[in-house]
Every structure is written in C-alpha cells, then in structure tokens.
Length: 428
Ligand SMILES: Cc1ncc(COP(=O)(O)O)c(C=O)c1O
Image (cartoon, rainbow, N blue to C red):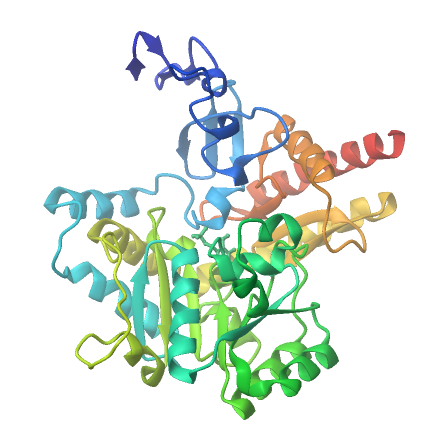
C-alpha cells in the first residue's frame, strides 16, 4: 500500500517500511489517529507492533516476529486467523454483494444456528457489535417493564454505550450525564446480600439486571452460582428482565455459559465469534420481549442499523458456528484447563495466578480484582517478547487450530513472561 509516496505496508516482506505509522501526522501537525491509535483498547503503554498477516494460530507482525495469536482480536477468532472455510463463506457472500437494503437469507441461516444453541430463547435480532446489542437489550427491557433503572456488577464490561460505561468508575463516567449515571446501580461482584437489598429496596424501578458470568475487566473472576441464581430469582420475582451478556462467554459452552450455570436469561446478548471475524452483535430473547422490536406491531421500538445482518458477517458467522461443534468446545476448554493448571503450578511461588475458565485464561497477581495498567502492560510486553500475543489486559483465548503441543507452548511462554514480570516488579 502506498500513499503520497510514503510506503507503509509491504505485505510480502512482512514489514512496514518508511516511517512508523504511529508517527504520521496530518497537514495540521497532529497524529492522524488520536494518540496514534485506532482503538484505545489496543494501547499497551508504548507504540506496539502492527499485524501483517495471520494464518491459523500464527500472526506475523511488522517487527519480523511470528507470534502465537492468543489475542484472536479480543476472543473473536475462535477458529484462528484466515480460516479457509470461513473465508470462502465470506467471499461467496461478498461476491454477491456487500450489503443490501432488503433482507438476505444469510441472516436466517445464522439466526437458526444461534437459536438452536439457545433452546430457551425464541428470536434474535442482529446488530454490529456487542455494544449495540447491549444498548438494544436495555431499551427492550425498559420498554417492556416501563421502568428505567438497571443493575450491573462492579467491573462488568458491556461495551461503550453510556449506560454500560457507568460501572467502570470515574474515568469511564466522564462525558456521561447525571441522569444516565443515576439510572445505574453497581453491585460488588458476588455480593449476594448487596444484590438482594439493592433490588428489594426499589424493585419496581428496575428494568434489568445485566451479568457477564466471567467478567474480564473484573480480573476474569467467575460469578458464583449463588449470585447468579439469586439474580435469576430476584428478576423473576420482581418482573425485572435478566440479561446475560455472553459477548465473550458464549465460546465456553455449546449452549453458552448460562446453561452451565443452569439458568436461562430473558435476553442474551452476544457478538464477537458469531460474526466469524466480521462486525456483529446479537440480542436473543423470549418472544414476549423480542416483540418489542417487531415492526408489524403498532408502537414497536425502532431498531435499525445500516449494516445490521449484512450478508458477509452473517455468512462468516454461520460457517464459524457450524465448525464450532460441541466436541470442539469441550476440546478447547480441556486444553485451557490443562494450561491453567500447568502455569499455576509454576507461578504460585511468585504470587501470581492464572484465572479464567475453559479456553479463556488470564495471569494476574494473586488476590487482586483489578490489575493496574502498568503491570498489565509489563506482562503484555514480556509475553510479546516471548512470541505470545494476548490482549493488553493479558486475556488469552485459545482457538481451534491449536492442539495440545501449541497450548503447551502457550503455557511455557506465559510462565516465562509471568516470572520475568514478577521479578521486575519485585525489583521496582
Ligand atoms: C461482555 C462484553 N459485552 C459487550 C462488549 C462490547 O462488544 P463490542 O466491542 O463488539 O462492542 C464486550 C467487548 O469486549 C464484552 O466483553
């Protein structure tokens, strides 16, 4: 790719030539992207590498490294990079047209596949991101209950809509109105008493309780079964809509993680893997709630999105779900459990642990809920230098091209990175 004679990307050579794009400035002297970043969530404390090309679990970057990709675009790429069957499905759809203003059949195909995995839910609406799915789920809950307030857990991350950001704390609530902030009650993780009291003191003001069963921002600590059961019971008893946000956790069970907890949500939000690497979000729910967005009903909620249900995301998503069989879900989860155990036995002595469940892992200093950013970034760079790519918060997600040998390598590299990070922190 060449722009204004400034060659940026030489795909064949696998490197970026000329200048580091982070340093590129526009005519008025500013970096083209704020801070040099296209997403704040890429940030790892210093200018990081650029992706050049991925295949399976391998990702090549512009610095000449071949990494084990355990970031997988923040858990999206369940079948790794550039999976031939998913590519073929996407290219076929694309060759027929990128997006249209009338429905396409791929939307029906993905809807059927997704709902077949969620037997307690009747209907689905697609969106372009998990953020949008959660926004719409709140609106459906509010419209159906005639109430405004919502309950979230501390550290639960549900995207970047205003309501969803409130639980993140002070830096997340900048720019959000008092009215929105007042509508959100934040409950400490797994504090059953707090949850019960919060609901019972003002039950008829709450439209929804939203839970992520394995919240990454809260340190990838699982919600307890007792807490989740209590949320389900309170919601049922008080006519509150229980939303389970499975944007990430859907990968952990063939029927999602909610089924492993033995509960059914009223609405389930998801995204990430169900688009096969393309933009997607989804709200699935019981028909009596989903009818809120049924345009054949008078007074229904407007729900649009120019790119919602676009054929490329839908076709790639359908291919992805077909490939992600029950056997593959369990195989990946077993590999993740074994890796967690192996790393934990080697890092406990330096005061670190690997948390998570199944195919999701994250190393953190033991006993800490929210890890500070400099520590996260140190571990990220230590992992990167050992050829292991995680998210900037060091969330690692396995993908189906990985076998036991690759996951052993992930475990070895993670162990070495944690030991090196712990040593530098002890010196500091
Ligand atoms: C649980 C959860 N909900 C919602 C979102 C938002 O999804 P998106 O980034 O697609 O908007 C995320 C993103 O990481 C998430 O983890």
